[in-house]
Image (tube, rainbow, N blue to C red):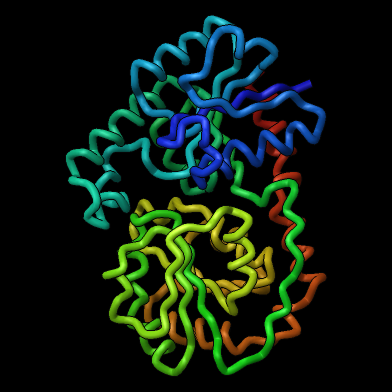
Length: 343
């Protein structure tokens, strides 16, 4: 029986569940594997010992970056004869794309520091011959750098225990738009549609922002409520209450690699979503999503989503179908096939 150990190295340490990427790439899949009868666990990199590696056949390093600690653990896994994989869900392993990183674009970090981070990530990536990535676009970039590697697209998904009920939204003139940024790095993405939001909010609509965001990024907009933090279960509940969610992305190489996880979560609680189009968004297109390739189309798409057919929005059969389509269980065969190929 397959056994998989996921290793994280986030700022949250042993509380890596709070890191959205670790939650989607490690915890959701580990839980699904356990439910399938496999041995699986998630550990922080600094908790790995030779004892903890016993009983596992595969080790997946989540977003590995070069450090002494990484090198020591990687060598320990090799010495134990384990199959080793890297998992990436962002375009962070090629320094040439550092100028497009949200950390730099948002003004949060100097380009030199971001380039150094990407160089360290590239140094770690060179140690691997097996990759799991969240999007087809990322797969293309990995294959360009490491053409001999075994690379598989394993999309982000809903957790196995996702049983959120459909929330029936009352028809009302007071519509609420939801924006749920995962980090402060999305400020420039948000600004790209702020004028469109301003026009809609000035008519009486409301905007709910849930997540870390600088107040100055929305201070010019009316009717805004900002919650700086929500636990994952509360976040999904709030997402189910808004009339439409938005997921804007600036058009650049980094964002072309982004996954459709915001779209997946939104439509799976019955909330329509208007999102910037990229390859993964198109791969997850459905009855409750509006994909926008031009900023000028945002106004029309938002108006259509807010005034859309309530019977479609509230259809349990549609939402349940999307929950099944995007469930982590539906992705497991892809994971098993990848693990089998590297034996």
